[in-house]
Amino acid sequence: MPLRGLVMDLGGVLTDGPEVLELVRRARAAGCPTALVSDAHAVSDELAALFDVLVLGPALGVRKPDPEVFRRTAGLLGLGVDECVVVDDLAVNVRGAREAGAVVVHHVDPERTVDEVEVLLGLT
Image 1: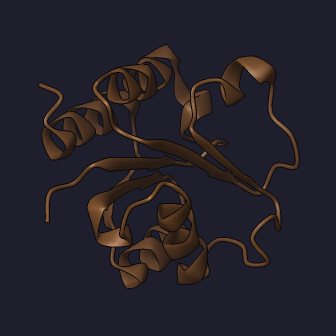
Image 2 (image 1 turned 135 degrees about the vertical axis):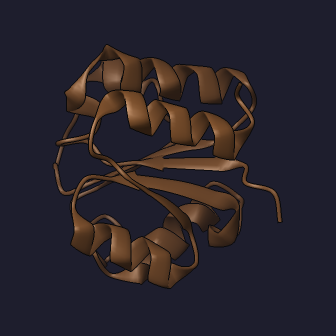
Image 3 (image 1 turned 135 degrees about the horizontal axis):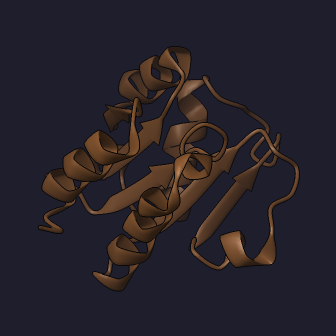
């Protein structure tokens, strides 16, 4: 199944530089549904505007790293979890997303994350 959705973490990923924020903008402009999944309880309006779906704190009744949060988030995007790329910097969350069935990018640095997501979503 082709990858069509992008699920991003906030702290340690989106806070790691403008190129990661620009990646979200590019994915969305290309028609890729986007979601932010974070333990934060609020985000700025500017950041929220980049995403089709916000899953903040315990909004879904489950939290990362529970695989169910990734399944439910994909459903909110109208996609199966196996159609989504999940980007997170914490290994425990990467494992949870992988267990759910998502393709994962373990964020280490902005350049590598951008490169990997571009390939996975066909943004190059």
